[in-house]
Image 1: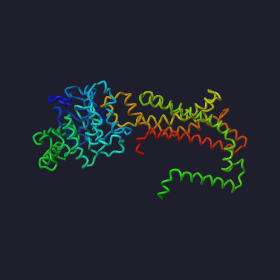
Image 2 (image 1 turned 90 degrees about the horizontal axis):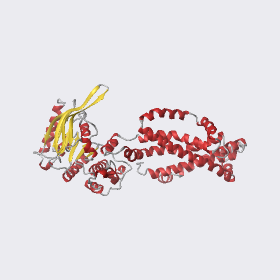
Image 3 (image 1 turned 45 degrees about the vertical axis):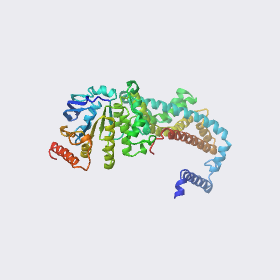
Image 4 (image 1 turned 135 degrees about the vertical axis):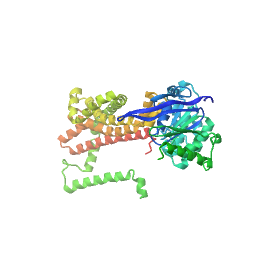
Length: 263
Length: 252
């Protein structure tokens, strides 16, 4: 597990651009940001601002075109090889021929996990942590959308990752299920003390989950503002019907609309 | 309706078959059709019984050729699909070759193979194998490439090797595609073996079909046809049964 003094995410002037038929297209540029280990960071922004792309750069799925970054004070490729980051996708991406337990165990079966000699969580522990005890032998098609996403969170946690990267994991779920899974996720985060970088386009989700909320803007993709909520959320806890929650949501909404030129 | 639904699994097809047999018998007796032109269902049934040893001796040869061809053709198809999926270069060089090869009529290919391999069953195995190859190759390539972007990203995050991606993701993903192809291949392999036997063979149900036609033994001809059909049906049943065990996770 990570030391408390460690910097989990360190981005220095990071940018990503793609070559297209019309020339170079910037997904985002000039992003500098630091997060201490154990923090819950939310990236929020409109579609096209590059938030998912940034998450993939941190995961070493995509190289940055400009700038430098470190994950847990190490280079991202090394961190990925050592399997210290985990990723949760918008669709659960479970393998349909594997049961819940077999899906959660997948990370321990590939990528030379045994040779790394790292400690892992047991699949059974993680399944009960996400609240699916009793469904171990179920196949993905027998589960609801919310349950499938719980399985994919359990799978991401089985390797005891230092950083958990989540790309709109509850984006496809109904609001009631989403609120419930937000509660579950915060409980897990408190228990495991993992750094989480969570991408969303829901203001309520960002206000509820984040200790730090980085607001991104599109055209060109960039960081518009970074809001620390430590002073306003003791222990990163907040009541969704409170005035404080309303204020945070309003503040985030204002930043977003200013950044996009008041649209 | 409830009772009909419960039994419709096998009762309805059975009634369908019986109605066609009844229609067939009605036409034969109604128009007084000569036996050597077209026999009645009862005549065919008794011909199957009377010639059971002859039919068995010949169908077992054809079955051996078809099954051997089925395994050979599909094995080659699976290996080729694996190579095609892993090498764009080989894929682009040889996929058109396979397509062109596939456009050659199988009836035209049989004499060529008989010239090379002789009248032995080996030439029939080759025809059966070739006729199986194409559908399996095309389906298997599609199946191995049916992975989604997030599945590949997942494997990449997990630092999975190429072999792990292949065996833990691509192969299981391709199984529904493979079985769709195998169900076609198991029946076409019988057709391939029979067609090749027509061109020239010492034994086999295809040879029996040709011989009984020339000798105006029409009941035996029909009995041979029914036996060939039964063989294809058996192979189809076996493949379907294996599919059910191999892809139990399917949502249906």
